[in-house]
Image (tube, rainbow, N blue to C red; front, side, top):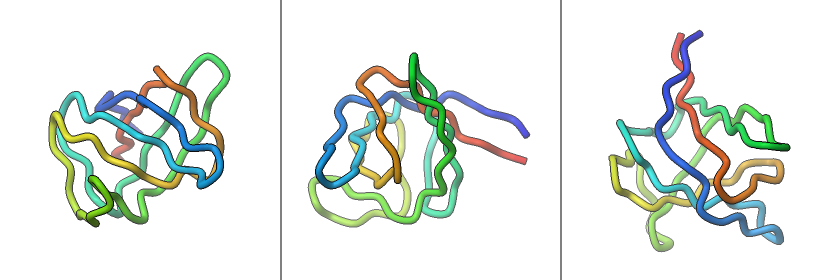
Amino acid sequence: MTETEIGVITHFFDKIGVAAITITDGTLSVGDTIHIKGHSTDMTVQVESMQIEKDKITTAKKGDPIGIKTGGKAREHDKVFKVTA
């Protein structure tokens, strides 16, 4: 499995379990698997849905600020990697 850095966590909404991610390189689509890694964070999540300003999207590109449910706690400045086979 290969991992490519595609973004960074800019905020985490604890009550709803949603991470705000800025895509810094490449693209991310619904169905992709991401690895969130930081000082005390290490989780793998399959992207089930994404939103930009409450609008559902299927693909995000460089520069897009997106929100996704993580199923666990992420922290600001954690790195986001796209996992490919």
